[in-house]
Image (cartoon, rainbow, N blue to C red; front, side, top):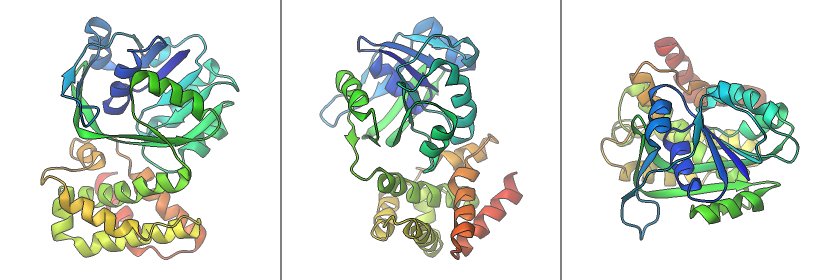
Length: 298
């Protein structure tokens, strides 16, 4: 099979490294200095994948290109870009896919499957990933800790599963993928927004703004409930998870805002504001933080 990993950052780079150990043809899309180093020296994923595995580093060699150099046909595409880049990435890939191609988006958010179905004539899986991973320096990916969990569902899941089996990457074909998407989303939306607003780590938000975090989580749960997705039991789980994180652990949105980069405010908060309005649900905390962050950083 010919497999495209669109975006070779912390998520895409790590997955591409392991997929490159199979017999499939792997193509990755990257930019800038990171792309140049991968083309010159290969990609170097570091960190542990399985609980029983010692930390390891290896060189992954595969074809890396920028988006303007794509060509040919792809059987499988994994979109590993920030949510605000997804539409452009999908349109770039469209000429190289058909109705037999399988597509999975691993960007943050709950609506990407629907977005891709509206843009592409392909088999679109819904999915999400749990991983702590980032570009350590150009050409090098660093994965932190043992966490790696990839969940997906939809037509073509069996084909993706067989590829992941070959690569030795853990996954689960979810029975209720929409609930799984929202279980991740309730945490990352709440703490992405609050870490960014208060300029604090996740644990500091938990310690200093517990009531605000709990109310934000409750409002997300209320929106999900209106979509027939039960998340009430996730509220305490999210707070407990936040309390156990290292003092310095923050969110990608907070880091992006601090670095003056483009951020995922629309995906992690604007989406909730729009859904609450459409569903006629009161979400004052979500609305407040969205408007404040728009004023502060946009």
